[in-house]
Image 1 (cartoon, rainbow, N blue to C red):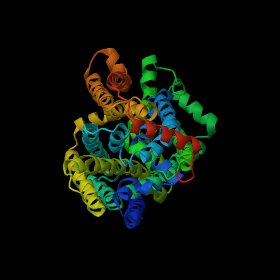
Image 2 (spheres, rainbow, N blue to C red):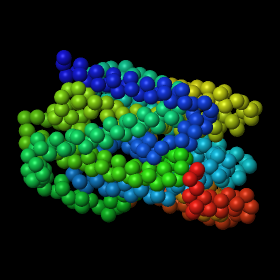
Image 3 (cartoon, rainbow, N blue to C red):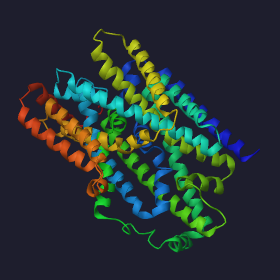
Length: 498
């Protein structure tokens, strides 16, 4: 068999496994809470790896290694910032959001949690946050589909549109039928694949390139500054890179995993697993790039076309074609895990946060689940339409969507969990100011604005606006006080069943 045949076999096995998991999750999905939040029954390992896989996407296997391959370890500052941000998110937000979302009428989405937490009778907070999620994530999903089409085009020479349809069909199938459980279980498997691939490539690569000493010498011969964290870095550049970590507090597709973990004890275990997975995976991605620099320096007759393909190319060089096929599947897994997570969160925003408000007529849980599945299909079709012709504006939007979510939701989530005096109007003001700042800052062309990542001013101005407006509009509310105190009591006592 040819190498391509082996690789196709590996991809078919992987996609069949994803569809099987979707079918299994479909059998376990009964009501809307099951479909949107997995019945709050995720274990520590599934919760941790599904959050990690949903977060990292193709950036972990392609973007980060490619950047380090071109510029050296100075590009690692983003990874450092993300690791710090993820740890703080798990440590501070995860346990409190898990408890507080349950205490506030068993909220199953971020917009519904904010509405229930702040006792917003106007429904405006839920509608605005639901619309923000719906708009941004539709484009986010579209960009993932673009990545899937490009993957098949560059790896197998398939038509871009055909690759897009293949990826979209498999992701939509298991997400549509299995809901949150299918997304979480597939993310768990995909997270394992990404982890194993990122560990295997650099370990084998170091032996191939002559051990640690020879590998480092080869890297220095290409550029002596490649092994430095500071060469070529500016203060503002480092601050901007590390500030990526601020985005974690406001990413709906990540923090919703915290709400779904079964107990507080499982949350603590998930934190250890999730951060361990993240650190080792980021180290693996970094080491893959460094091994790639050394390998191609030692083999000048070989050239690497696209630096972002260094992981894929090394996997094909170092391993049997079947194993290399599973390496390709790991890249596809990174893309698909993010698409599916964003699809289910967007579906929940459309049904739980917008449809239920617009159409007040009561429906059964079975009808809501059906509507949730229909929403997944509709959103996927819109995203597919946007992705059909590769459009740079979509990718440009995604470049600051992380900052947009982080600045619009991050401070509001933190304040809602830790500050009693946050009000509906304060939250709305913060959201609008944070999102607007990111969009305006990104459009400025003066040097300071270009060099400083827009999440920094967006996050700070959102925080200031939310605090100032909340202090101006605060009125004591006995129910809010009672729920806040109850949350603190439960976190302190750590009951076994919560």
